[in-house]
Figure 1 (cartoon, rainbow, N blue to C red):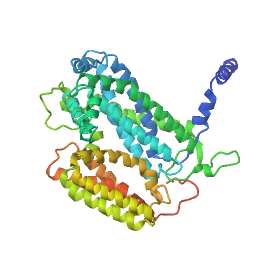
Figure 2 (figure 1 turned 60 degrees about the vertical axis):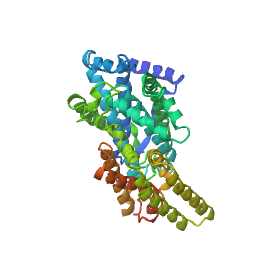
Figure 3 (figure 1 turned 135 degrees about the vertical axis):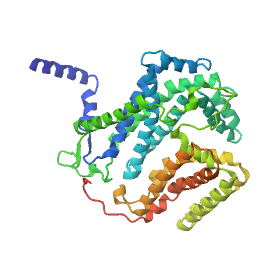
Figure 4 (figure 1 turned 45 degrees about the horizontal axis):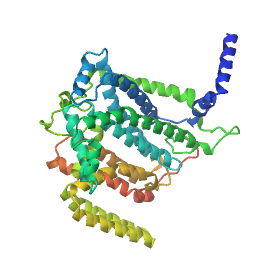
Length: 458
């Protein structure tokens, strides 16, 4: 036994002389001290990594049999499902993983809003996370076209045509993305290359940078307290415990539960009643047969709903008063004359733009701003505390309304944009943007509770 242990140490020493294996293990696991009060919300970061690995592995096996050709793509997916050994399982694991990836990421981002994980010193960490989110959306959108089902085809046709709305460069940009005048073989080939090679490499790189940045500044916790500020004589945080073995074991338990849910869906309800795999995608793409209601998969629908809610009436009676009120708030609450002047100029340009630029363009702009607003959150949030435990009723109310609006917009994105559905989508759009626009005020004036010096076990 001692001989084997000595041989193992010699081998490890030989590797360490040539590669920092032990140093990396200690820096990121055994001697990386995380707050000792992590709760349920801290599972989703590790679960996102688990799903990413699963998607890459299942994607590799799918590419062995898939053919990126408009005449063969749909048939190759059917071949995978019917003739390849365990092909149906690999395909369902991949499609289920795509949706559950977004479930995990949305909950991970919600956790940041709960406990202030976007605040100093984690602003860059948050920005990298938002970039990962946008790259994931691009990856999912391009993968959505690959089965070459009817909804895949028409969904891609509609989404890419949005770029036509961009003044001057729009039509050329849309044609460049498609590689043709319509969604065709060139589009499928380039989307396949980007989905299988380019974007996954970018995602892996961004996830690596995200983890390195996290371990540089340290993990946040439900109290929003920086544990690095209180250390013992050895330099170890008083409220920290080694990530390994404590949180690796915890994450293994969470991963096990997650994989049980994952496999139940994949085995028994992979379509999840049309939410994970749409019924129209089980028939081949047909340029002459438009689906009754063109809609993206559920993880895009909140932003798709914002796009559709931006009508001429909404611009006139919703966005115009919103710009005027926001400009007035800034002008009367800021003392700097330059800021007042810039705000007045921007508001004037927007109001002129509302009059001369069609609503379709503003829909695309607002859909982009709905994503871009996340980048500004670290500077919009002015609260003296991080965690929702010590924030007042204003922030809690705002976050509750925002969450409800996001879920409702997601649901409305799957419904026809008419009648009550259209009205609710417009209300949801206003609530969504007010959450970000009013954040500097309600986080400033919100009454907060005293933050304890050490982490608690609530």
